[in-house]
Length: 272
Image (cartoon, rainbow, N blue to C red; front, side):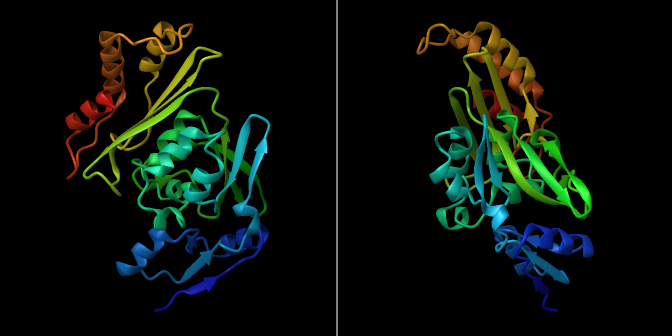
């Protein structure tokens, strides 16, 4: 059976369509939905958000950037590398350019993938999601809390993700991942680190090594207490870095599947 395709042109119309049929499959970039359709999934209705102008907007609100739910990885890389270098760096590691031209960070979050590259950068930045439903006040949820397990999120059946709100990076950021191959691979483990030199704080997020993203609080505290903040470019003592790695590994729950054991993922987290 061919699905009915709804193509709302406003956010209100999209929310109305979602409320009328919570079982409908929402399409933004379509990169994941097309895989499901090719595998035999036959939803009765698709809600295509590609014509909703509000969801393609990018705006700056004080010390944060608001990214519409239909903004692609390519736009993040090309338009937001200045204020959001961590998210842009993580986005560059995702699939190939054809996929990045269509796929969206918000769509990956809705899938509930705990190994998402952008997820690591968003958690390290303490980003939030704006969720909306017809007839209810919009709510804001931390990205760190949104994914409750593989394929499971806090999104209600009648809600849509409207936007991501990401604080502007106050200092250096980095993202590193390990995959089963060198290109176009999901992260077996990924680590994002973001520093705030002005407040002498660090944020370290790990994805892919457990059923949900992790903030390595113990490692963050050690880094904040002992980093040479007053000496930019100063070498870091190997034993101290090793202890930070151990604390990161200790924060990871561990996840075993065909791509690696829980112990292997903890070791990856420490090395990355």
